[in-house]
Amino acid sequence: MATPDSPAARQRSLQGRPSRRSAGGPRLRGRVRRRTLLFAVAIVAVVSGVLVFALGARPSVEVLNAVPLERGYVGTAYAFDGLICVGSQVTGTRVTGVEVRQSPGATTALVQPPPGAAPTVGFPVREPGTSAEGYTVPAGEPDCGLRLLVTPTRTGDVRAGVVRLSVAYGPGGLLRRTLTIAPKVSLSVTRTGADPRSAS
Picture 1 (spheres, rainbow, N blue to C red):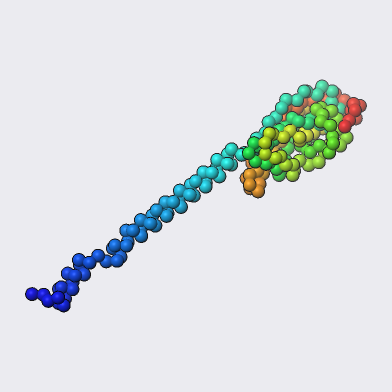
Picture 2 (picture 1 turned 30 degrees about the vertical axis):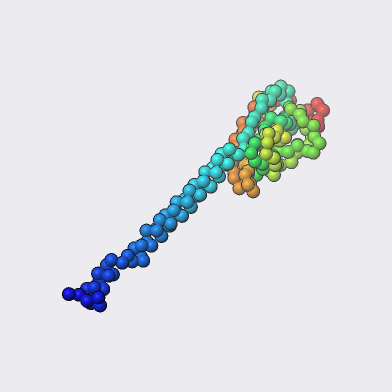
């Protein structure tokens, strides 16, 4: 017969008593799993929000039709204002770079008009403007303030080149996008020299 102090009695007593590790283990593991799940849900929510913002805030470009120029002069720069509209309803947009794939017979540039210049479409200009890089558009309706500048280099029918516009947008301008613009501008160039029409 086992006495209370015998090894057998102590063994039975230990077997009947729940250990701290076995009692607290499942609860601890459950708390860890819940925290991990909540952290994962928070990450998914943040990533989803960023994606929704990035897709919804992406700047777009609209190219309006231009009246064909029927009497152009080789070497004269012609301005086409208000044809290219850029912007986003959600966030501001800043132009970070401009590349042009030139078309045969003309040199194309996208610039900011000189301060105070009157808008013009298809008229020669003495002051072409400054680089479009750094041009900033606030959130809201698209801005059509950039100037397309086309300078014929030969006689005949010529067209404006294709413009690739790099823009930054979103918080701190961290998001980037490249917009491809094919301006609907054509010129019938018949003469050389300075265009006698009034220039702005």
